[in-house]
Length: 98
Image 1 (cartoon, rainbow, N blue to C red):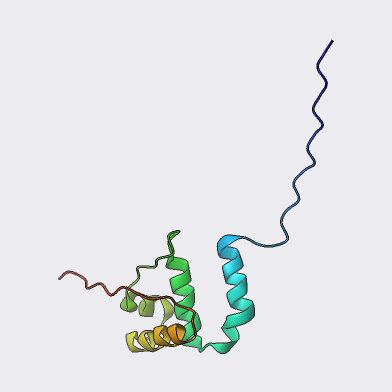
Image 2 (tube, rainbow, N blue to C red):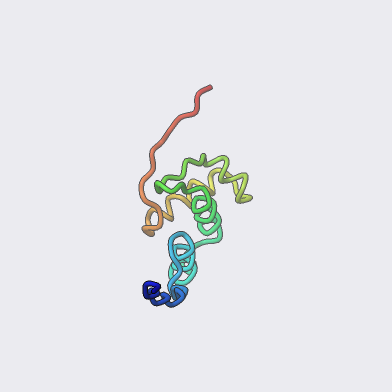
């Protein structure tokens, strides 16, 4: 005689809530983006794209400026604006070697 079969587990239904980085992008779009300048949105997107799994983004302001189509000074003001609005947590200033 064969042992009884285990009942098949029902197929997993996809979660209605997106997880991880996609959820963060949705939240930014739904709640934060409307209150930002165009430069702040561009800078946020570049930093978001460059953020590693440990939560750090090591990107120079001149690189952000080039990729976002901004001047370096505009990036500086946009980063300050993001900090004031609570959309950027701290930074560590690192000088490049000559």
